[in-house]
Image 1: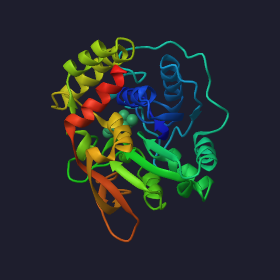
Image 2 (image 1 turned 180 degrees about the horizontal axis):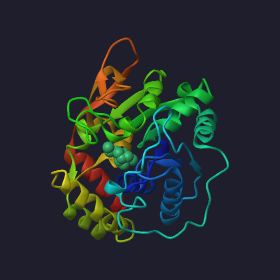
Image 3 (image 1 turned 30 degrees about the horizontal axis):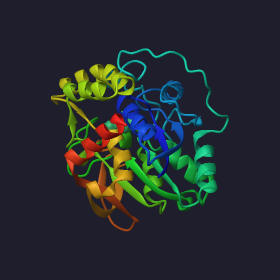
Image 4 (image 1 turned 90 degrees about the vertical axis):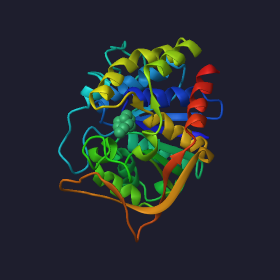
Length: 300
Ligand code: RIB
Ligand code: CA
């Protein structure tokens, strides 16, 4: 699977990137960064750092630092830590972002690999909407978009209605949902059905001391945050999205046109609608199968 991850790294983003880097069936062609858990520039720093420590030689392109219509947000430091990796302060990466913007890179890589690229946005959708604006063929050139965000039948995680990624840039998501791309949504309906506990991170470190050990070290802050909102452990959001792209057979989906609320109290809420292209919404999963897939990649 030829993959590009659009990311705001971020603890669970780091898990997603680690999984993609270690999996033999994934060819990771690049990372694009967006605001969200951190600023876009901190995200670029973190994405470069992760690619270097994972031994990847791939482009990192920096994208949007603000949403398309809404005013700028403060990064979610209370969830992911001041620099995105819990309490860890990682060293400066050796590499730099490429000169292309995230949207330019996304358009180019899709054009050069027509019908082959799976794009996994695991942050706000701003860069993807920008790419759609930049190249009218962009959506058509992709194989699919499998995104982390939204919730249908479960309450939100930033407001009672909205999941964080869709809340951060609903206007961008609205553009993407109408683009005609082949889209799968991996939202809280499924990502909160797999809760990782501290013991799971300990196991990751036992399986793979270098990469699993890093994930364990950055998880403490994240797990503490989840405790403050009454959860025993953390959701498996971003890594699940990559696994859904690679192994759709582990998920049950509902095909429905989707809308997103663009203003008011329910802003960012995703809902079933009509008169738009259908989206495959993940509604259930093989929890043990998904978890095993992640642990097996770490063990390789
Ligand atoms: O709601 C969870 C999502 O928001 C994840 O992608 C997490 O990394 C944050 O971006
Ligand atoms: Ca994310």
